[in-house]
Length: 63
Image (tube, rainbow, N blue to C red):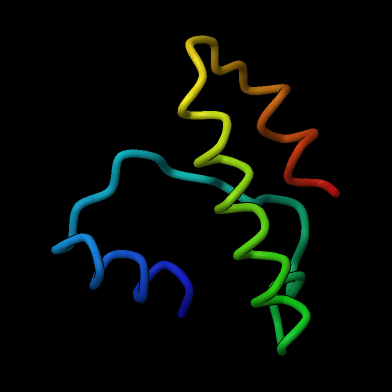
């Protein structure tokens, strides 16, 4: 749902891909959608900096 909405706003194009593994059913319900949106915001914030490290992305999205 979140990915579909983001892709529809951006004409089907994506600059970044956030992969969430090892958390079966972690993105369900209203809380899951809120968490997914927060992760998207965190990745977008990190992408605007010069240095983007995988560990930073994962640590930031775990919040």
